[in-house]
Length: 414
Image 1 (cartoon, rainbow, N blue to C red):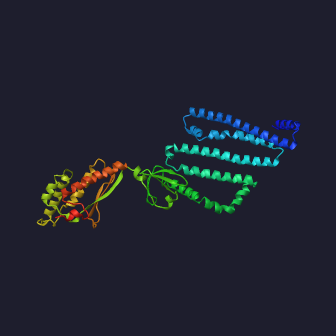
Image 2 (cartoon, helix red, strand yellow; image 1 turned 135 degrees about the horizontal axis):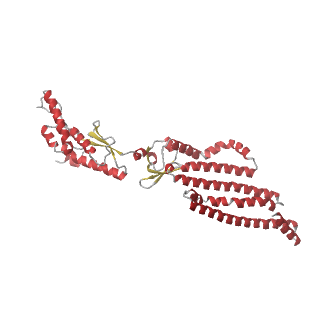
Image 3 (cartoon, rainbow, N blue to C red; image 1 turned 60 degrees about the vertical axis):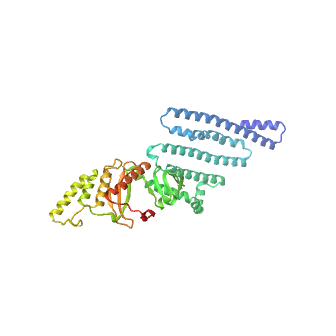
């Protein structure tokens, strides 16, 4: 380059051009030539490297190298060789213009920082895409970790660029930044909070991608589809997207349905409110009538024998039903529900099945069903509940019971 520079300069002088003008023309021609050379080298190297990566990735079983190509890692690496060429020849081109040489070299140094960041970003995006393909990491907040590394890399890059432009050594520049650390903390407050929250969420395993969460404060009720430093995205069941700041997962209360999803059943917890004035003792005739119900016929037979034996042994006066031991229509109905649930094909028999009577209220006596459906899918789960309660509401008149309803116009008809 130095020989070519001298030859072209001497040629310009021989044509009678002023020496100063010859220097400028010489620099311009050499700079244009260098730019053309750089673009040519960049084009060739880029083609060769991309082709080499593509050929290599097609022969391997892993998809990591395919992701490298997809995220333009070879393309960004290809820029390194033309950059080295430019850095080598710039001093020769601007030998007669030292101030401009310093300026151009600083620009190239800043560009080297940008080029490094491009390569790092491509590698991190590749790593992120690859980690998401691993089944054990699909539900982890990979985006948050990658963003933290990128923020750190960009911060170091920006500080390095400023240090190069100002001519201040990097270490001295960093130590001087302590004076404005408060401003930096203020600017990156949400990022810092998001990072800390993401770390706590990951360490405590509070939320994973794919979890069904309910966050009433933000109106979120659906599946987590993304976790990053700035937001946690929840796709609601109506297909809308709710964004939640990560630190809200730490500071506020929310419900994660993962435990239900990973369990063997989905809980059914619902009550029938029964009119209190319909509860009564059962006469022998009433018991005999209820024995026709197959689910409880054996229970009534055995239970009635035990009650009769007790009353006979204790000489109980049964002219009044209140005396001694008796069956009630509510108690028999409760046993019927228990038998019905234990024979229902959609109820998980390995999990708790309970029918309990809660404290009486102004709306009647709550008879609560506590059980677990084997099918956890929402639509099927709702169908199972509806099927169970349809049957029980229709069965109540057979036990001479009524469900409580607030008075309406039909309640006052003659």
